[in-house]
Amino acid sequence: MNDLQHAGRSAADLAVDHLAAIADGPVWRPVAEADRSWLTEQPLPTSGRPLADLLHDVRERMLPYPMGNGHPRFFGWVNSPPSPAGVLVAPLAAAMNPSCAGGEHAGTLLERTAVRWLAELVGFPHRPGAGLLTSGASMATVIALATARQRAIRQQGDDVRETGLYGHSPLTVYVSAEGHSCVRKAAELLGLGSRYLRTVPVDSTYRMDTDELRRLITADSAAGMRPLFVAASAGTVNTGAVDPLEDIAGIAREHGSWFHIDGAYGALGVLADGAGPRYAGLEQADSLALDPHKWLGVPVDAGCVLFRDPAGPRDTFSLVPPYLRDDEADQLGWFSEYGPEQTRSFRAMRVWATIGHLGREGIVRLVQHTTNLAHTLAAMIEASDDFHLLAPAVNSVVAFRHQPTTLDPATADSLNQALPTAVQRRGNAFLTGTRLSGTAALRACILHPHTTEADLGVLLDEIRAAAGEITA
Ligand SMILES: Cc1ncc(COP(=O)(O)O)c(C=O)c1O
Image 1 (spheres, rainbow, N blue to C red):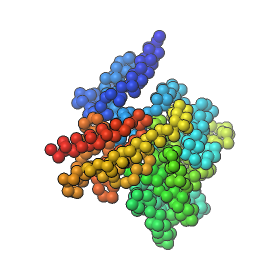
Image 2: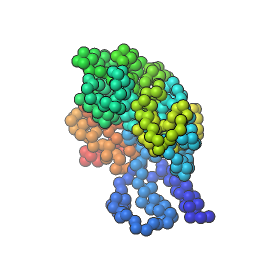
Image 3: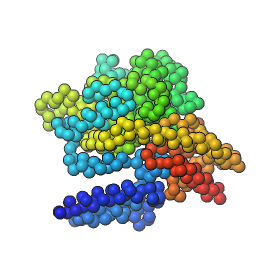
Image 4: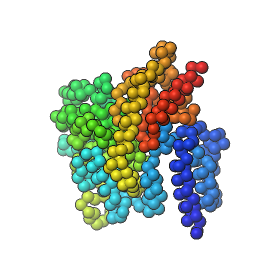
């Protein structure tokens, strides 16, 4: 065996052993000072080192310090464990190392299938070419908003790529108060200006208030602005809420606005038992962002943007200098004509392997299991006298608060703000916080196929124990 074969087998063993041992270790641990210095301050090496030495460093200095999201008691943000099939094929995609900008090879051809499968899973109509894999939902949103911007300027007889936004009346963007910050980032990046971003209030269940949406759009139109882009959420990051998509689709259509859905986390929630009606209208979106690297568990990074019509993104991004190709590509062109990235990694292999291993049935089971656990956690919270549920548990996020009866609201607020870090440092569970209706909140996002009801009990006990430490 040569060095690469030998090291390759060791690397595979390391990965598999790491995955097998995760549940027995702490969810997260602080990085030891010596390792922190090593990780951050290594000098540039003059001579190369053997592969076996590098693997030794990975084992000793890196694998002991994961973010925590492989563990069944990781409930933070929206970060899933990696699917075993995705982990398995990741080095193979790297070994092939294509650029999936375009051309005829396995990487680009398989991406067509991966995108079509994602659309089919969530019930979004798919036309060939109408979607691509991205680094995540943030990039998906940039691509969708840029496409909407080009369509709006085209409708005024211009091409935004040529004229920019100069001389055009302001274009307004609408997102709910619970919408993800990636919408604002995209609007700022694309020169639309956060001044023209409208934060639509939410109702008591944290869904976009459609009367308010209509009122804002009408006021903006009357003031000479163009309502460009309505970004609805299918699964908000704080509570998992799904906006009233069908109503929003109607309002967007009525005003000639682009209808976008951020389904980064929650689009897959449509697969849970009885969830269908909540997602009615999803199929009407002009664009849908969804992240295979969230609920589906595809190893990072893997996002996706789907379009109703493939012509829009191509009109927005296609630029084919002669050094890329001077022949006619197939009808669909290159992926790099549908987004800003030129060199693109072989994400499709990880998406394909993950879906292929689980199958539709396995994905439904994963979504159902984690959704059921969220309902169980919500019921445990409601049955307790020291926790308070802040929003209905839809999808697999639960937003709540620790509220011991002895604490006044202001003290409870600072306690809840301090709790996530305190829980994380104890190492037995990991959750993160947020603010909901102006108060500090805890949120648990359940994405791991091996999380159990017992883990939920541990989570609540860990919060109580951390609260005891803080108040002591
Ligand atoms: C609802 C929602 N939208 C968008 C994003 C941004 O996605 P990404 O981090 O993949 O860019 C996230 C990330 O957590 C999210 O939860």
